[in-house]
Image (cartoon, rainbow over all chains, first blue to last red):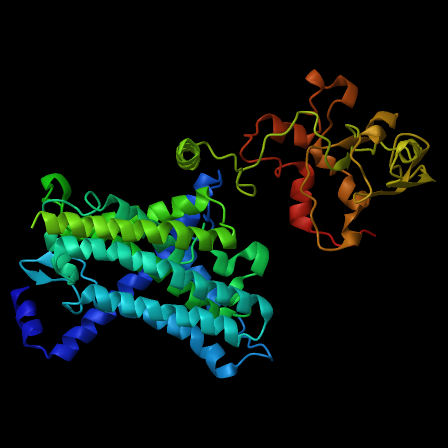
Length: 335
Length: 198
């Protein structure tokens, strides 16, 4: 083990980063596959169904079957589509979804961080990268050259802009408390108290906007099946559709990771339960957040579009601003 | 304000309902591997039975065909010749066809039959790929001679059709989980897989 660490320390930086990235990619893709199965199971149980159980024991091979199906499907491009952008769009979504993981730390061991890069403005970079993801959706919908995808992508753009503001506001409250923009620094600042307690309103706003940002029920107007066929991905098939699908779930995972890092104490153990390693705490917190997502999907119906906009601008944004001002005031007055 | 608090309460109630449903008993029956237990007098696929001396019960009288409200049964009778007797009576069914797509499984043929030749078994899995395959003729309806004899429909204990020769023996000892695929017709259909009836 020591020899391995020594060799790794001696290895050039680019090699270490390459290995770390490959490992992380593997972990994220596997997590995506099983998050999807988990979601279908949870949804099934909540609707009194057994969920997928035909492929392998308890349906555990279902993701493999789905992947094989998507790969074998025909890759269609509509006649009216803009071929270059149409083909590029899914990969914009996919790449930005994965790129975020370059700055997300998962744990800490003897002072060394479990992350590809420890960026001191981690949270800003993270927001910047994840904001680019909407280009995949809006360009994909626009380049499809058909009306439902266009409507879906217009909605996506409007929704993302409206909710991103409140989301950033909810981040700033945490940044004021932590006094740093480094994700590891924010986790360290939560050693005594997790930020979802002092920032309970901020956390609530974050949870709501996070659901909206990842286009999930009850904010899934972007792909509202009942009105827009499939929304922005109506015309996509095969692996390109799969890319959007993977991006959506990876974004979900990202959002859960951010919630864990910013509000749920990251890899800090609660109640002094330090015998369980920090990485497990991290995984458990992310898992709990993902479960909440699925629970939400099984419970709430979709918003009406005008109400979605009204809620975002008239309730969430003022509430987030108020939360930010009050947090800043309290921190300033306490010196 | 009060209205909004009520909304939050409704929201929480919704969440608690979906959460509690996760642990409820699921009503799904995983059909091909697990089969639902059906009523004892269930009306399924027909069967033409024999006497103990392996002679056919059917005498080709066509009463079933005239009783049939769906006109699903076609019987063409013929005279028995002394050296080739199919049934103990004068006549037998030279052709006996039931269109199972027309059949409404009412059991009137069973009631009309004077010799208790035609009975409805509990078998219900008749899916096939061609329309023609649903016209069952004697080769698929008639029980094989070794299947034995059962009670007449009127003499069934508790009205349960556990009297269909070999079907009866299999069925009386059967677990509800394994279903009725082990019945006489089931075995025949499985082993022969006949196409169009001739």
